[in-house]
Length: 613
Ligand code: F6R
Image 1 (cartoon, protein in one colour):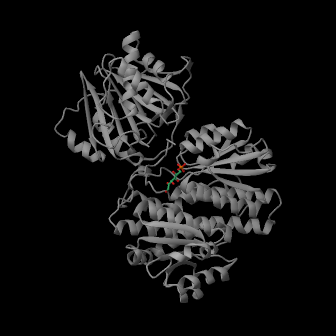
Image 2: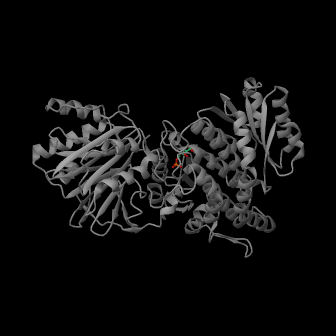
Image 3: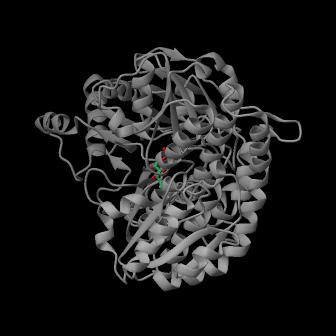
């Protein structure tokens, strides 16, 4: 949600800001803007993609070695040039970019109006920059002090960067509940919402904590203070982000690249953690709090969206293999209930970004109730990773496509490893089955690879056949029910076709009324258990003239006879099926979206990393 980038150093800021915004565009893409100081402060803003801003600034003065840039996902005020960031204070002295929501902006705005402030935009952000200006002028404060005092009056979430034209050799940045990272280069600093715009310049970073204010100066000084005015010791971390991981390479879209990366990302997730030949599995995070995890009364999995679907698979895995009761919760619901959680519970947060506001808040609540909090996260150093007592990274590398793909399979791989590990250690699966699962886990990357090679043409063909359908139904049983939900989500988010996922047997309790010759029904039918049941469900759809696209195991001739189209996936042990059955659904939605002319990587209204509630 909104991308922020700032630069101060000896280089020209403009290319750094623009390239940074392009890298951050997946966080929001309704408008973009930059401010660059060069004796004077030049602010350029444009509705639309970063490219619009680039076109607009071609004939402008973009010289300067200090600047800030922003790509917006609108909350307050429609996407237009005026509401785009940066926002400038009434006296023209301060320029600010912001990610988050200032919840008490209306009250603050009224008070500021009484002091004579007038506003150009409908945004909460403009209120904040006027508030800082008001305090700075009234009390004659240095910019960092004015920011600190202003933020103590603000309710809500923010990551901000401010430039003061009267004090132009510094950037002032602050965060609360919205991510912000400071990059430390040679005689230069970067500030950004996430490390992607920074990684090509430096891998040395400091992730700001909530209610911290950082000041970086041209002469190489970095100072961090709390909002209570206490000096903090910066914790400098080394990133391990490779530039090629952030590029599209030869692929037309990030989403396609990320789908095709899955043989590697699943293998990376298992690297050093599974060894079938030697018969061991290690999940470091689990071992650091073994007692509490092994003796937990129950696991509560909290997540949103695609990560929630991975969590649902976690429920099937932990209950079947480790015999641990599991509840899977939408983080947004969990946080506002008054749930019964105590120190015998383990709360597992699943999040690609590690920044999702609801997941973060649910975790904070669970932590305050004494639960052990475990994070399964992709982004290293993210807020969830830092908040949890223990956790495991999925090592999928940067996921740029807004529709999550490789992070999902990474999460499911991690959950599978945990469940197999716990099942064996708790004695709920025999050694023979344990070894078989380890071997099968190690085979998964090759099987994904084979599936991607073999099914590509057939999936493209089927996409062409159903691309004009206004609706689609996804059905699955057992481990494939969450895959039905995920397949439906992938289709709706990038192709704007209305789609629903259902447990196959539930179809009779309502959705069957929707089925006619225009309704594609995608049935994930790779089950070993309840195979006959899913065959009956397909027959029921066919009896009503529905068009059946079935995902089946290689060599399944029974379903091939009755379905309109089949897509074959390699066989595997049932608990690991989701790692394969999701792949054709990702590709199917990709090709349908492409054929419908949709923007696959930046679907309308969506943004990666939902840092507001
Ligand atoms: C869908 C998608 C979203 C995210 C959700 C949670 O393709 O990407 O549904 O899964 O916003 O995000 P994270 O995993 O970052 O917490």
